[in-house]
Length: 132
Image 1 (cartoon, helix red, strand yellow):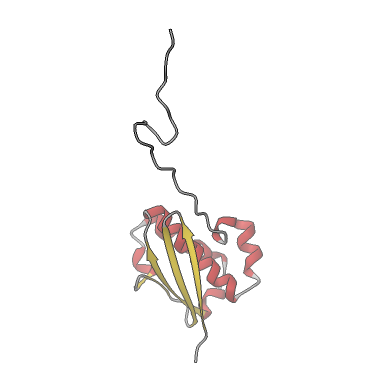
Image 2 (tube, rainbow, N blue to C red):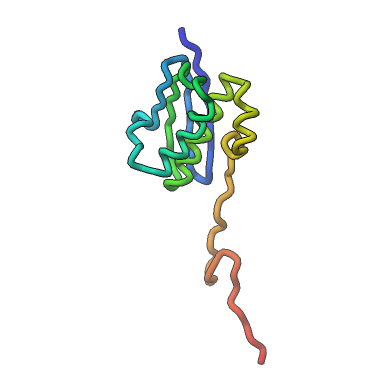
């Protein structure tokens, strides 16, 4: 029986739940192979970063990612973080390499834009007043 590990990565409202199993180096996002996302330039560039940095370490594992919520960029960053966390969970030696390259691969960034308040032009901007 193959051991599996569950990893969660978040960026804004995008949530990527990943399951890692021993396998042959395939990565699936919402039941689609990662190779099928080549048309989406940002998605393919960001998600391929942890795979390229890991060298041949990723070829030992299959990663299945369930992705929900968020926009195009935050979805790509959540998948990127999920792949990086999965590889670090299985191969401890990759942690230092990922942290030196980009810390945001392993640390979730949950910051969101502040909602706009009623009767204002922006989240914090107030109407200017003149007393003259």
